[in-house]
Length: 312
Image (cartoon, rainbow, N blue to C red; front, side, top):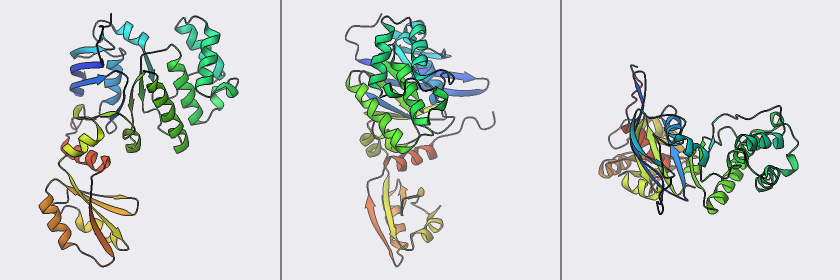
């Protein structure tokens, strides 16, 4: 049973999963309050999907303990599954059924009472009513995504776990999807969503960053940026592209990357970075110090992480 007054939707410590000689998730701790939207970030192969599957009762950890929605992740996986809506990376519904038929099938799996009423309400809430008789296999990526979201909220879960749900869809579909996520969150639903997109991460209340199975950062975006210790300078102008290779590897320039038409140069030693900028004054290029963005910080975190799959 859930604990009365427990304000943490996820509370796990030392979560670990090993496949053969590879440690996919290594001693991860997460404390996630109820009712928030959390972003789960990291490179491919970082352990995000494995962690999500352990949290929602689909995969048993090799070690670690804790709760999801107040249920023990080791002993009460069945109860967790009933309270969580899980959306996979790949569209996993039946393409030869209509949208309505897919939702009716899912309603039967969960033995939902008042099935027709619940399906009707879900179609309306997700904007699917006018397309309810369309075959799922004929839908675009954005509409498939919306159907998948409808299916995993049909049983009125307390939490959604969404594994890279916006991969491969257009910007408008991504924006519409996030509007739906925040609408659901405003109704009290807790959401954990993995993503590669920095703009999506910045829409979340808090973020967790994991790299090669290790938890690298957790908290509010602003706090993670402030705690990174990074300084960033931005170069703009006609000759800015010529600077990129010249700056790479020089003292102070830990990472150099383009953002739009500007060059970001970041490092942990402000004095060294300022000295470098002073030596790299070029006609037509202007420099200014700027607050590091989330991508600057994540590149920095990646440089500090170790790929544990090497040699496995």
